Length: 145
Image (tube, rainbow, N blue to C red; front, top):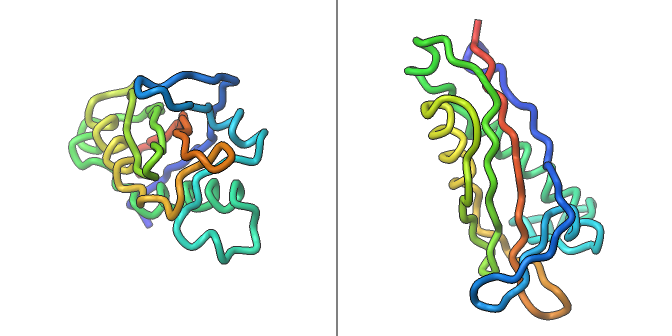
């Protein structure tokens, strides 16, 4: 399993409310989690876990499963932590907002991973109103031996 030595996945969190351009609400993941609001990852409805734990576990497992160490990064001996900021929008789809740190080869892979997150069965909701939730995920790339 020389393919990957990856993953420090921690959902980084900020306390914040924001107004989206269309007048909707955007919550940080911590604010949403504190209020018990989370998008519903596919098949989490049938899980014994809470929706928040099911989302977090599925996100971590998705990153591990989809991860590929870029060949160009391997050849150049590149390592580092890439921080990807994204939202799960009101339709349950992922939108990448920002990518920070590291080499562009690693950034591209981190964005590719996040963009492959499946559409949620249900978006997060404030009452009955769909809302967007913002996430910040660091993905650590460690050179395979």
